[in-house]
Length: 128
Image (cartoon, rainbow, N blue to C red; front, side, top):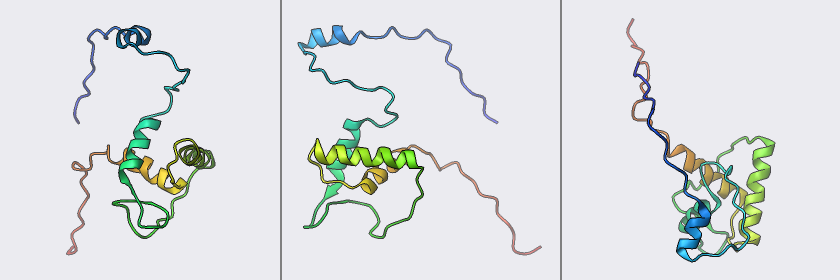
């Protein structure tokens, strides 16, 4: 089994966002960003959706996704958040997106991080 590598070096000093804003001439517009949003931020998700949504007349679909729908069971609290996100993008951002498309984008973002190249399956010989 491979050994885990542990970083014992000194951590970098955190950058004060107010100093960065001042240096860039930015001003506070009152937008609060919750850092607990997880691995994908609202802006990243928005950019992904805008880059993948395409319409041929009806509801836009995500380019590259399957044409047939797959059934996926969601935890109630997760689906509520996904529905809230799709409502946010429709009403606040003007992006015509469904809850299922949001779920697909989030699932894609997480699954694409998994390296499956090292997964090996046991082979069973047919002749015993």
